[in-house]
Amino acid sequence: MSRKSKGSKGKAVVLLSGGLDSATTLYLAKAKGYRCHCLILEYAQRHRREVKAAEKIARTAGCPWEKVRLRFPWKGSALTDRSVGVPMDRPESRLSKEIPPTYVPARNTVFLSMAAGFAEAIGARTIFIGANAVDFSGYPDCRPSYYRAFQRAVRLGTRAGMQGEPIRIETPLIRMTKSQIIRLGTRLGVPYRITWSCYMGKAVPCGRCDSCFLRRKGFQEAGVPDPAILS
Amino acid sequence: MSRKSKGSKGKAVVLLSGGLDSATTLYLAKAKGYRCHCLILEYAQRHRREVKAAEKIARTAGCPWEKVRLRFPWKGSALTDRSVGVPMDRPESRLSKEIPPTYVPARNTVFLSMAAGFAEAIGARTIFIGANAVDFSGYPDCRPSYYRAFQRAVRLGTRAGMQGEPIRIETPLIRMTKSQIIRLGTRLGVPYRITWSCYMGKAVPCGRCDSCFLRRKGFQEAGVPDPAILS
Picture 1 (cartoon, rainbow over the protein chains, first blue to last red):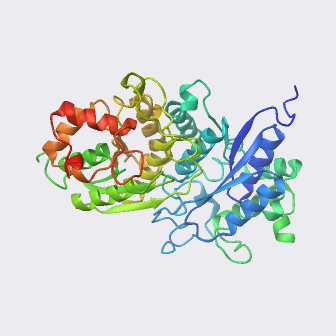
Picture 2 (picture 1 turned 60 degrees about the horizontal axis):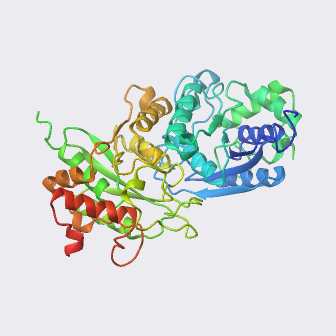
Picture 3 (picture 1 turned 90 degrees about the vertical axis):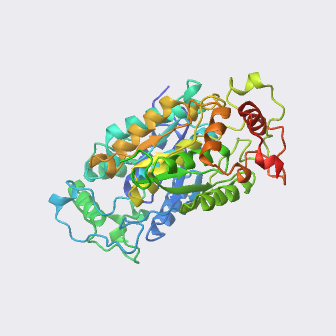
């Protein structure tokens, strides 16, 4: 059986944020033959553009999605708390060395735990998350060691794991640079035009936050025009 | 400094369900000197009696609480899905040997991850959960090995852990029988009268579900009358 034959790998839950990493992850999981169920988490983001982008990506990929609304008191992060400013025009040298103000406490742990509950409920045994340790190495919950530890906790703490069918966590982009991700996604036909990366919720991307910076740099290095900018 | 002096241990997040185990855990954490912040999670429970009981317990204990509403698609569990029946009159021999239909996929993982996010956001470094491996040994997410693994994941995946101030997970009741818990709680002044254990949401406890059975047995073995029945 071909590794890429559709439907051969069973169900997977894909955490979809609306950004380009998770969109690439979804298309990669599909290409590997998983029947993907997207999980879109709507928390106290500064804006809903990301959520709308995520829905559009799932629809475009032809995958069912579940949107979970979470009213969570995530204070102190620039992504969820308007009293904390989103950093602008940060020099590249600082991006990977410190935990940025956009860190949301235990966010990926919350997301993965929900993905684990959803996966177990629908009979999926794989979770895909587009975490990346290269560009955002300042985030503790983007490190490979964290994912291994979390996978172990989920194996011990679920019926699936207890019954010998543990849920695996796949982080296929974790060691890739943004330009490698974009080259891969371009081959896979990821609709980058409808992805949203900017931390701000304006009509057009600000071009100055860390996320806009890394996106622009990634497309430049990949030698591919950013279709979201062109359109 | 006395181990029990109030305020000596810093902030803690206590997961409060409304049942007697979590209420006992809260009073124990208070007695140990923690400044407790209760986290009450309102998910797709069959009924809201538990949530109301949890609020009342936090108020009685004089602790602030945060209630988080989570609309989560937890299908297939008797606690969240009305199409699955709550088992009644199960023989005691079966209670600890199999995963019951009241198992909610990865529930404690979801709860703990939110507690971790909340703890980090408010500067707490301890999470208390009233998990118990004796009466409900059928639940995978009540085993000590699971808590150790989860604590490790949280240490690796949070800023607090990265900065050398990891969040600890305390499960003080995990190896206690229900009667031991009730004896301890009685000494601590836990208001058992306002706790709610029954899986059903009727005006009075059904007396026949696993939870009612274990509560009755616990009070009988502790030689203490159940104040919720008397009142």
